[in-house]
Each structure stands twice: as structure tokens, then as C-alpha cells.
Image 1 (cartoon, one colour):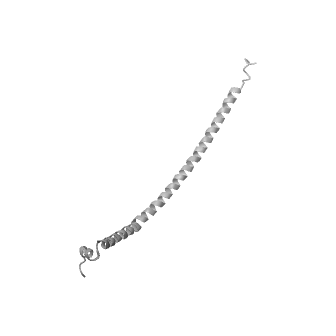
Image 2: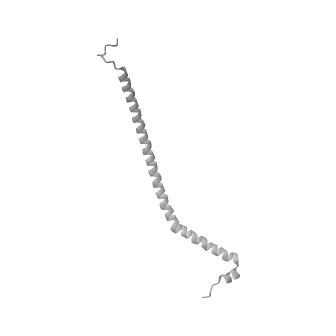
Length: 100
């Protein structure tokens, strides 16, 4: 087998042809590397991201429900305190004869 020398190839076919072949191989190598090694990692990361987004949405919904419940409880407690205040101030002791 004859010894292949890059300089002889350039002299025979010209620099643009040899450079195009070299760049074509480089593009093929990068494409192969991306499809074999990077794409599976990106797919796993994408699935993990989707799961995390779903969990964050669930937590957000839970926080909204808890806040709503807490607001309802605070409103009920305020109403109860208001009713107790009104009944305590309106109560007239029958044994107190100083009034009337």
C-alpha cells in the first residue's frame, strides 16, 4: 500500500478539495458524537425537567389551597370574635339594679 502524504494529496487534488473532505469528516464526527452521546443526556434532562415542573405546579396548587383555607379560618375567627364582643357588651346583668 502506498504511503499517503497530505502534501501529495494537496498537490494532486488541490487544497480546496482536501479541505472540503477534512471539514466533511469533521462535521460527520461532530454529528456522530452529538447523536451518540449528547442526545441521550438531553433526553434524560428533558424528562427530569418535566417531572420537576409538575412537582412545582403541584406544590403551588397546594400552597394556594392552604392559603385559601387559612384565609377562611381567619375570617371565621374574626366573625366569632366580633359576635363574642357584641354579646359581651350587650349583656345586662339582671342582678345589677343600678340601671333603670
